[in-house]
Amino acid sequence: DSGVTQTPKHLITATGQRVTLRCSPRSGDLSVYWYQQSLDQGLQFLIHYYNGEERAKGNILERFSAQQFPDLHSELNLSSLELGDSALYFCASSDPYSLGTDTQYFGPGTRLTVL
Amino acid sequence: AQKITQTQPGMFVQEKEAVTLDCTYDTSDQSYGLFWYKQPSSGEMIFLIYQGSYDEQNATEGRYSLNFQKARKSANLVISASQLGDSAMYFCAMIGGSYIPTFGRGTSLIVHP
Image 1 (cartoon, rainbow over the protein chains, first blue to last red):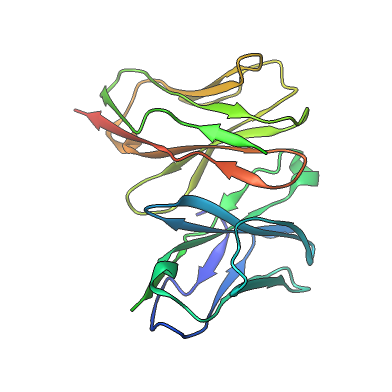
Image 2 (cartoon, one colour):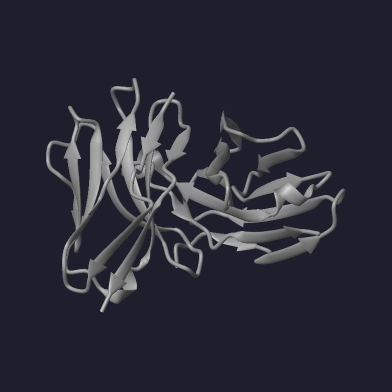
């Protein structure tokens, strides 16, 4: 158990809908990363938040948005869903300034299926 | 831009033997971190080992060691005394000064009894 929690574990929805994925980082970790893992694209970095502020952005679609709240939990919002958005979405957390390594610890993931 | 290359899509090893999973990287950053993760069929991503670009010693964590050759920009993972539970996908990753993590495509390792 990495200490990172993600809800829900599974999500099935229809095209055009909007969903919210939630992540709680390990206690004390200020950084949260979001990833999308699909069979054809591999593990794609979406976005990184540090202590509530966006720090880096990867291949995140305009239909997707994220935020990190004052209690450090984070949410990833996916809207106007398409079939191709079906994937495993991971959240990871780290505390780079404490450990000096920015080692990321991953949550169990949310399996999103868009029908 | 950063890049991670894992050239071995699949590897096979006999139980109790050692195996090396290759990883080469490309970056213009002077300071960066290299990581290996394991993803079993259950799907979770498990952190295995970390190597900093300024670390002079190769990192070791139990049966895992990272063979870091900075001049060749390689960061190979060595698993000693393979176990059946080591069968999984293995990902090499790096983070540099841009705070953007980059992952390789992964290597599937199968350990035979």
